[in-house]
Length: 396
Image (cartoon, rainbow, N blue to C red; front, side, top):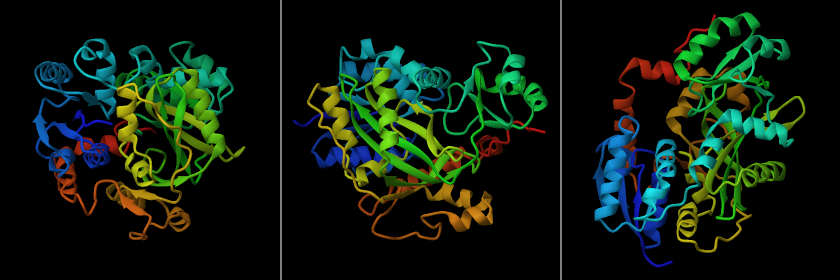
């Protein structure tokens, strides 16, 4: 493919790093949008132009106006939204933005369906795709749901990131007591069958072409995650799992998905079936494992954006391990001795030919400092830790 001028919208996220490196290796010109100078993307050696715009999480309208002004007045062949908020914004304004540049995002209606956990679970249940039994209090009364479920249950926002807002409620009385408080803080909720915590969760990093045919599905085991009750993966490993690939294909092709999607699953130890939990309609922070396993997701994005043929990729390196060391340390601190002993790969296995780290590479070491600085700023307020640890609402 001829050289392109690429604008990456998420310089403040870890997922931008492998994209920038892969694009530079192919000779493309790379601009990156950063919320401040203290972030991963700003420190990367693989950037040609750094742009400081209003933080998209705090000022989405200001960010969009900067984006629209930039692509109107500068050569920009393609924009890559890699995070939750940027992917939502670009999908929302796809018609206007596409007048000036290319992009690889689904239409807004499809994006919003995939982002809605309630809609996704309903689709899975109607189409016999394995998932936890899920109830929507917006469609039936809380008391009716209580009459049908077995406790404990999981309560979670219909839209959200990681484990934020996720609560386990062990009795009907606790559900009655805390439901309104959780709803007030996080918005619409779903009530979900509790699946006993298993040793491994999974995620599938998939990619669909313009005809909504899944051309890539890399399956990842998640032996460790934080919070330890279920949340963001702290250690990933590439594996093969044909059943997961088949079910993810049925889901994404069924909803007419286009582009990158991450599907989270949990292994139900009661029947040994991996069950779909949600779709993350964007690139995840841990996408580096895909690049390290031999899949160039950046090239796939550009091929989709410019209407090029996209090859079907079935093979990738197995046993590649990707660690988020900061969260992995928190996993170790909050996990019990049995979990520490049984985990594989071992927590103390810091080096090896297949072990990688999300933010660090020898050929691009400085983003690690940006990551440290951004997190010092982010977590200097105690309430940030409270939200991350899932203790913002006291359940008793």
